[in-house]
Length: 156
Image (cartoon, rainbow, N blue to C red; front, side):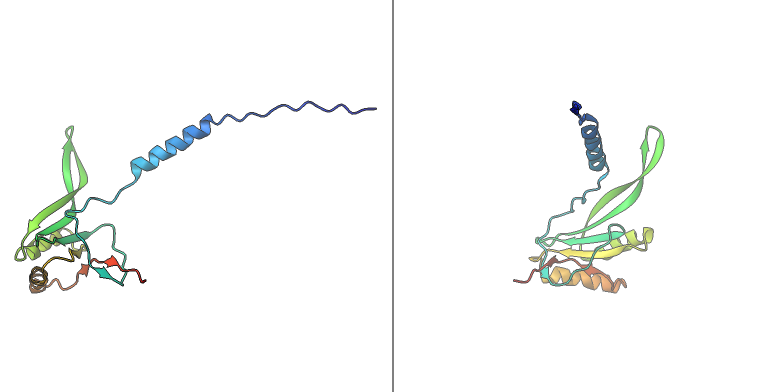
């Protein structure tokens, strides 16, 4: 007696739902991702061996450019009126400062957010005198704790 082989039925998997879900996930992640906010002014940072992670929020950036311009940059909660409803959102505020007014700008921001960390971003070609004036003004106003951002120097 011979055994009859059953005829195999070809299996066909429809890939359309999987592609739809992949595109929906891609769109979701693209829409909800928070990218790094643009800097007030681009600076070329000095090199250093140290590495410290900065927090994502509650940071006041003091930027000193190579042309010795000073900017105080922070994120603040503001109320916006949209279609008759008041909505609270975050807004990036960038103020131009001088060595004499930088401390008062930082104090103004810290009165609204006392946990804010002061971070100084100075261009490697910024003059020493401006940085000295900024740090001296901060010390006179009892702001002796701040971080200076540098690029990480890799060992050869």
